Length: 277
Image 1 (cartoon, rainbow, N blue to C red):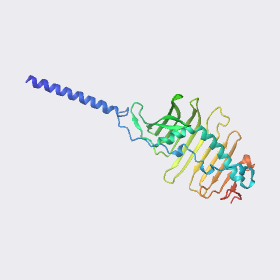
Image 2 (cartoon, rainbow, N blue to C red):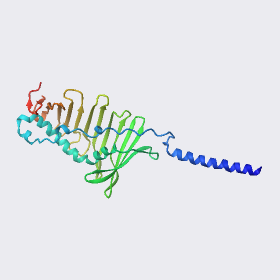
Image 3 (tube, one colour):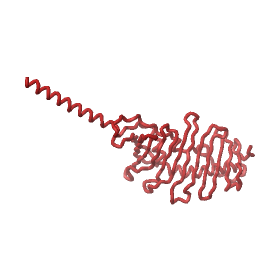
Image 4 (cartoon, rainbow, N blue to C red):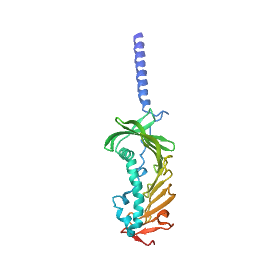
């Protein structure tokens, strides 16, 4: 009889040990508050970071600058070219890292209570390692992108941001680079998922930069002139507004500094100057 009791105790103890081990492993997969992690959050759309410059890309504006016939469209193209040139170089690494993120599946890390997208990407002809962290909050998601480049820098927080619960609006703050880890660009974005409309705004927030406060806003709407740039140059105190039709090319520009008036100046389907209707 004693032997049977002794064996029963051993079995009971073994079961308790096994149960404890199982619960330990199970709990390690939970969040810090003990609840199961939600499904991974949706990364904000590419339009949350990358502005559309395609309508004014790959066009030689030299001829337009010297010809009054194409002056209105040419002035608009010149404004866009300046921003596009600066941002293409400055944002090369952040944009490459962001675009690559959509191709990968995240893993939940209970130690930091975040979903992590980890992957390699190529920028400026070199391989980089990215770790995008997405932390779900009551108001949406907080994002942090850490980038490493072997032999140069490790886990540099290149940009961070937030997106709302519906992934319809948010913002990013970008730092210049690992040698100058100061914030220089604020990106604010919105989108209407149902209608396909969206907007994005880049603002220079580098405090030591003479163009601090300058911005460019791009909006896509459902109007006949369905695309808009609003451009503010803080050093010239000049506000430029450009509206055009993406399908039919015609558009208009208001540029007080250049035209010395507050009127819109228009171009037609051939980009030639025309009277505004």
